[in-house]
Length: 207
Image 1 (tube, rainbow, N blue to C red):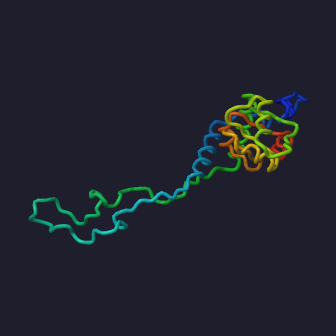
Image 2: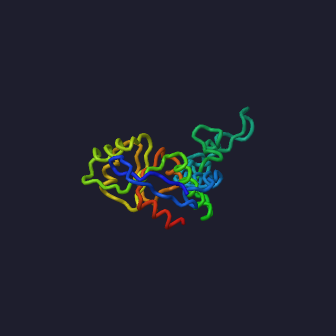
Image 3: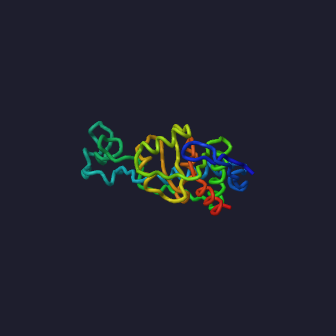
């Protein structure tokens, strides 16, 4: 059963927390991680790209010159693809990039991501995370106490407006909840800063 240190906001060790093997100590599935991250990245695409084909481009209703006798190649429209201003051949059109991933695969990928963070010592668990005022200075102080840098995901059991406001101006820091955190966000972050309550919520949902 994996164990991690339980810290307070001052960076002091106040105990130890046992993590469930079936969530934080599994054999990570690289294939599940790939499939889920690929699907989540694809879902971020708007799919609103659009070009006009030759039937949608304005003009070109008249044959530019007669079929024979001019010495030039035959042309039917000045809006054919080979003309400047003509329609585009095989260009992008609006589409949905959504990829289907089975629920069991999504759960396996989430467990794999959490396990990798524990294995890499990138999971920091606090006994509690509360700020008196929504000031960036307070959140920076917490990060300094824990020696956190780079991309940090603050993972909460439920949204805390004070913490969210205090962290939103810090580059590379995202604040989310257990319900909203994606596998891509977990893998993209260098460090996960969470609370004991958030860990228990994961154990309830995935256990």
